[in-house]
Amino acid sequence: MSSINFSSVSVRVAIDGSDAPKTLLRDVSLELSERRIGVIGANGSGKSTLLRLLNGLVEPSEGTVVVHGDSTTAAVRRVRANVGFVFTDPLSQLVMPTGREDVELSLRRSVRNSKERACRAESVLERFGLLRLADQSIYELSGGERQLLALAAVLAVDPKVLVLDEPSTLLDLRNRELLRRTIAGLDQQVVMSTHDLDLAMDMDRVLVVEAGRIVFDGSPAEGVSFYRALCAATLDAPSLGQAPQ
Image (cartoon, rainbow, N blue to C red; front, top):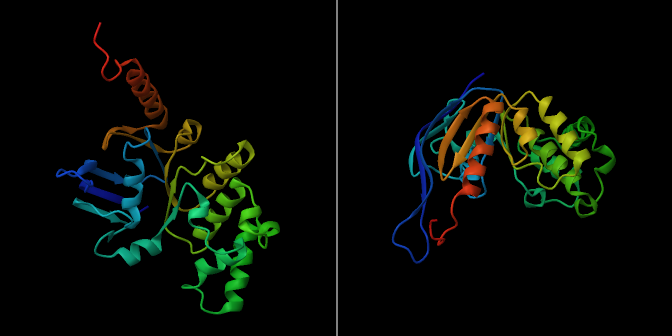
């Protein structure tokens, strides 16, 4: 399997009213070749920034990101054709009235013939068990059904890499398990951020992000254990402004 490479990547953004930029990621160097990669960490740690670098939604302030041979800045269109991105809230990417129309929209660039496109969309929806929901308004669907439709729309174009940003946040137990099984059966390389530590345990490799840095990189069991200890240490630390005893 080809790899994803981060080389000395930092990301900084300007802050209104401040002369100094805010650093979201600092000096990240990684080679990601495993089939399933989990990213865990607290809110605001830099997880989403790390993921958004993978398809050019965020550009490095320093360093380079190369996905399966393509630079995310020099070859951004090719990268986006090869990297599918599923957001936390599916309503942020389901733009058509129904799931069928959304899947067909995803296929519009790669499948020019409308009849072939409709046939392909139906096949994708059937593959994910969504055909019965295909013509319902997306606003009538549950959060889990919307998330699975968003996933189907992204996978319809057969990307090489699938990036999932907190995909289980809005899911009930049944749909979470369905998502888990779906991810396990995919051919694509998957990079997923999650607060669900059971999902993280399904991965081949886990990264822990803290304050814009990769503070752990290794096996899922060790990564989850490290993250639990990190959270416990944070809880045990004196509150800001509290005088030491």
